[in-house]
Image (cartoon, rainbow, N blue to C red):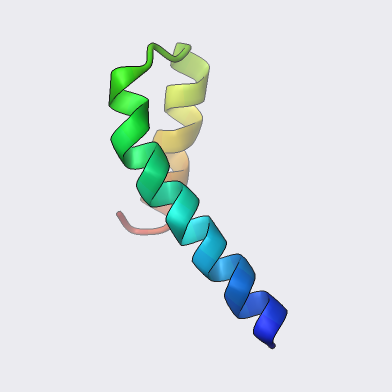
Length: 44
């Protein structure tokens, strides 16, 4: 249970970091489309 919670918080932390870092870095369109689809899937 503790490992699952740690993984969840790690994913949230990476998501928050990516949210601030990604607009500053040029990324390919397919990466952007995958991120958009993932964010729609998680109800962002």
